[in-house]
Image (cartoon, rainbow, N blue to C red; front, side, top):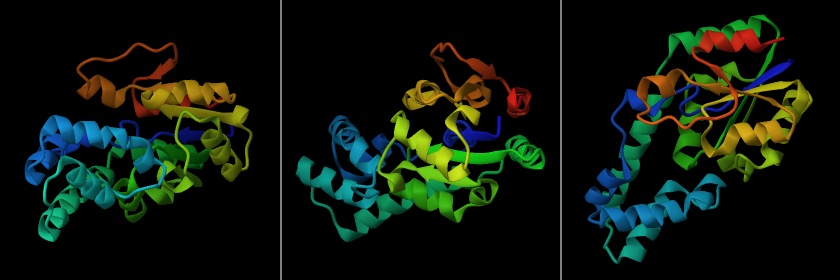
Length: 221
């Protein structure tokens, strides 16, 4: 292995360290029926993930489709609260994970990141301490493609200057990311440390598992 490529959410960071600004909370603040809010919000996942619309634009569209008036003050409140929640979890420093990233760097291993993310998440990432740990970071919001599209894995490997077959991909398994990595020749490894701590139901997957961040180092062979 010449490089390790990581997923972001629930792999290097977790949203469980803070109170999430959930769709239900957002809907309540906007005065939109929660079920309708979630339905419209999820219908725009691809648009938000691939940089077609920002979070602010999504909120405006939801209110328009729900027939709910939206003031500038209410829009600013909702956008800022989601941004604060995202910034908190992305800036939360998990010492064991940062130690593992530093160990990889000391071994001469290149480090990459592939994340399906929205506008507010991409902004929070770039403002955080995390970019300094990566030789290449591919965010779906900026790249216009998402996991598990093979092209997003190939793009990251290209940015790292390695072949996909020379990469270990580490992620919790969301968005079929491990299958996507395997499809281009990367070695998939499932990150279990946050799942084991916080998930109520864990889907079984046929991949090797890293129970702790340090376990990742065992797969650099």
